[in-house]
Image (cartoon, rainbow, N blue to C red; front, side, top):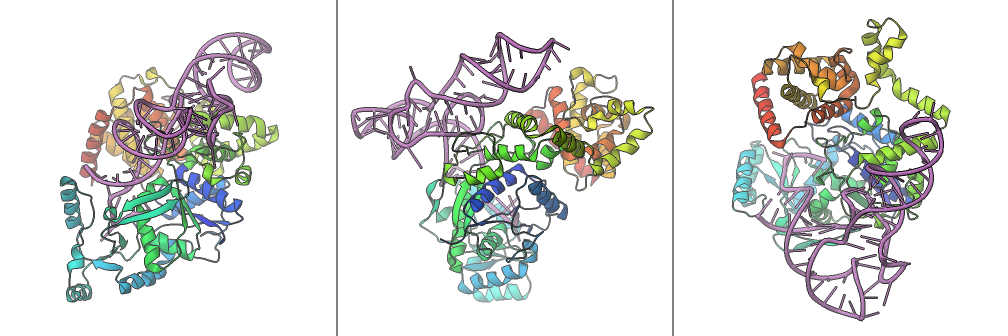
Length: 498
RNA sequence: GUCCCCUUCGUCUAGAGGCCUAGGACACCGGGUUUUCAUCCCGGCAACGGGGGUUCGAAACCCCCAGGGGACGCCA
């Protein structure tokens, strides 16, 4: 049997997600258990959304959890580079092979035409996909369009009938009719590959033997297998893991749950506990023990023992486990040191001190004033929000709109936060001072504290989101109907400010 | 709408035809320890989605139904 090589291939387009860590954990355990290698590849072919910061955050988060890799963009390796944006020459040469063999073809259709096509297909209740329009062009027409530089993409051909049958390590045989498979775009008009193309090319050249990924990929597996077949490459073995879920069973999302690994770090969870908890999602130790390290999990790992029901990510059980780790695995010295490292992170403290120094007369004033920087969720009840200036409905509205606005910021800093608040306040016709009242309470638990804008920028989006959401819940929550109205409001507002 | 995947206590799960009167853990409820609280200990509540088969025997195997989820982008 060939050497086992697995990978995690995150896209640096947002916060480091617990789902990424979850899949990384299982890939790593499987590879190491078989004496193989686990590698990290960055899939940054989406130029618009990929950022260097997100990449760094993802690497930091995986390292924090102890999910180290043996090859990756930060440490190199024999299949370097490990960042897709640095591999475009490879994709360009590989696509020529498919173009030459006729397995791929240029497509000149506009986004508008495709959108209209999709709408029509939905209305006619038939399966949605490209209609092959550009396959009807003659060679001359294609050559003419190409030479005159008409913007185009490259799509793959797909069999018109029959089934694609493949084997999933956990689910057995899966059969999907080719008619369900779209003529996937392989190269975008910006010349960069799509996920499907880059992923297959890289997995091949990086000698990935087992593709362990989320269930959401099952339906696109036929596209990937077809590419392997077109290239004449050996296919990896596929394993589709269940998806982590919200309490309502939908796919885990940040709207409903804290999904950023940074949140768990900032809330003071131990990385061992978080990764242990992820290991309990869909998997158990053979002896049923619930407290185990990545090493113990690796030793006892058996991918076929993964259960397929989508596990609900239940923070109550994580809390219990984390408490157990603190009580049972940390000496007093460990506790002191780790708590101090957590509480006095240099990047954070340097922001807090200037806010606090001018407002205290004794050191003993510091904790009452700024203790909220170290708290999880402040203790709140409805009366916390009582004041003469803004009523409870307005409070909820302010909090929700601010949260959405903060989530849409490209850079999470003081200036950006301030201008968000100022503009929403103006939009609502509320004086900025009154507007900030509910935010003060949501963030600090009090009406009087250090500047709320600075506090938000220091606490970061993960903790801010949790606190604002907590405050909204205390105020009775927001119904779907209200949320829709507010979203509309936000859109109108966004248009006005553009 | 089309296709795909899934289904054991509220939640995470054990379960590979008889060890199942379905086990463990979290949560919850009760009791004990503790000057309080927490920890810790003891106890309790609570599930095989429904219907058909196969079999001497089904939570487990097969079929149908229902429910849940996912995919259907020049995102990944």
